[in-house]
Length: 349
Ligand code: NAP
Ligand code: ZN
Image (cartoon, rainbow, N blue to C red; front, side, top):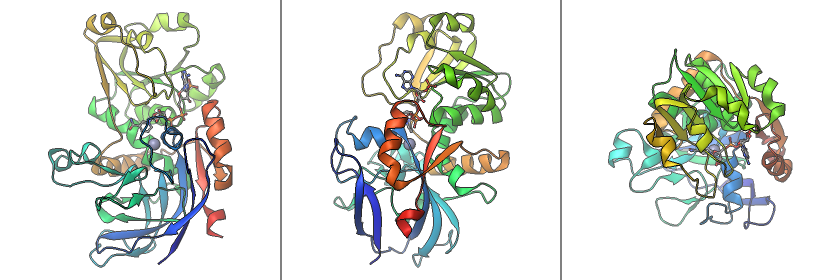
């Protein structure tokens, strides 16, 4: 059995350290992948440090996985050895509940198996993620990477890309609509690019004044620095949609006030503390507040193909796996442009 080299969190307080385990035996519908790159999502940090509670250790984080197929099970028809593939935030679901039937496996009513910090359907095997040299995944949860996109810059599409694409599509965002993207980090910078590609006018809302220029370069038509509340005043009742990607507790009421009547604000950021909502800001004038979790496998492939057609990739900083703990600290300081992507080569040596 092949040995997988990885980095793992052993508990909520210690830094990630080297770890190894045996790759699981291939089932007939499994695909074995050599991991080349893995994006670093803020969810990795939240879970490694048990900020949402219930974390399972040891934990090998990572759910923005790209690599090449090295082996396929006897019944696999979609992928061949050498194909460039991706794996996002989930690796299994029941495949027969109402959500799975509607291609929304992320809301599987019998429990989605997440790529890490999760247990496989056998009830005992821990799911280890992408900060590793390899992974074995069921064919139906493997994605095909667009040929024209560089794998390192495309890795963040597997989570940051689909998490922003899915709500923009569900709420029908397109031309003649004005979209606010709050928090210009991994998710937010993809939100700007995808909303622009869908034809919307984009307002970037950032708490970091130094990101003003950058947000424009990423495609934002307007940038609002939220630190000074006066900057928000001209935008009140002016937006059709607000996508909130902020990872920390923050006041969402001034952001709700930016929506016009019947406008919607969708939360994708997952701060640990509950948010406070002023009923008045929702009731008048009939605004909506909702949430959204990643996207189904079918929609993830659709998003990858869309990004391939539009040449959309992430702005990344490549790091060796040995720098992962420092990368977490920089992410907390809002100091990443705009996604760390781990180059797995040093683990393969
Ligand atoms: P990230 O790269 O760290 O970006 C988060 C951004 O939030 C920061 O760049 C910053 O943007 C803003 N921010 C951070 N602290 C803030 C504060 N105290 N006040 C105001 N703004 C602050 O994180 P990410 O990887 O994009 O993930 C963002 C969140 O989405 C995380 O909570 C993550 O767990 C969650 N997530 C959810 C899903 C889903 O399916 N719903 C999927 C993936 C991730 P500015 O500097 O521009 O203000
Ligand atoms: Zn993620």
